[in-house]
Length: 379
Image 1 (tube, rainbow, N blue to C red):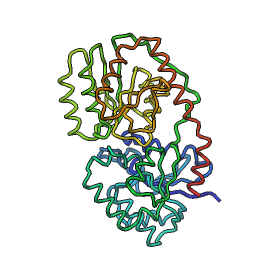
Image 2: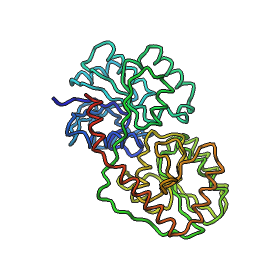
Image 3: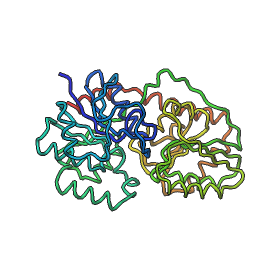
Image 4: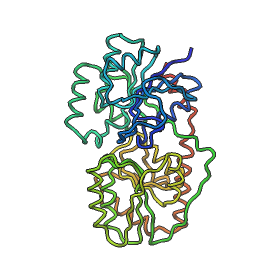
């Protein structure tokens, strides 16, 4: 008998601003819909947008090819409304694609009070327990965690992490008296993508940043690193401006850039164009405060665009395999040193690094083993 899984996620298709968690769920459904019936409750609004999606019906189940979706004003859900939505179908498992939300409290209460048929709740924090993420809005998050643990919710439900690093974050935050599944994210199927790269002249370089404009993604630090660098440098920025105050700080720093560095904000890029966008640049500069997986990192690598990352992602040991760098966030000098190396790099060296980046992503996209682990988690 097929398992019926309810996914509760803040943003889903056709979101252009929701970032990696959207892609995580899309890939999950694409890979498992042959074995699992998926139902998704999600927002009728995209991130930071006040108008609902065009041409989408809200507050009723809508059928897509591989799942059913219930679009609603998810930020104003009450326990009564959520109970009514859940009661319209018999679900075996609830899979929650976030942590810090009242909707999670409502769902767990519905589960604990036995007023639904749900037999298991699984929470995927999606990097929200990383040290960098917890530091942002620290007091509110610690209060939420305190309440959650006092009521002992965390020991009565299941948890999903997508890497060893995230598992360590979850255990550090919740303790070890929990049930945790560590299963990697599915990536997209890259089998039809061929390696391509652009020419690289020593003394000039084109960097790119593709992510939400938010303190967690650490764009301001990337901008500040570049101020220390000589050479002809282009730095293009793509992504939704989620935090306008933070973006103003970035703009103020950009205005102080020396004349040899050209920084431009390019706006949003549709997901289907992300890989082609990366193919236009030499390196992805992304000193993030924390990623539980980093789909955008995988997309940069498959585009043959080597990455300069913090060490707060699962993509570690990159320099050892010539695919990029993962650097301790406290080592500003190391970031600057690597950026200088990128500027001076000649074409033969760059082509080797680009090919290694592509090969890493290509090998990482084989999902067959993960399918078995996910089916087990949902069973």
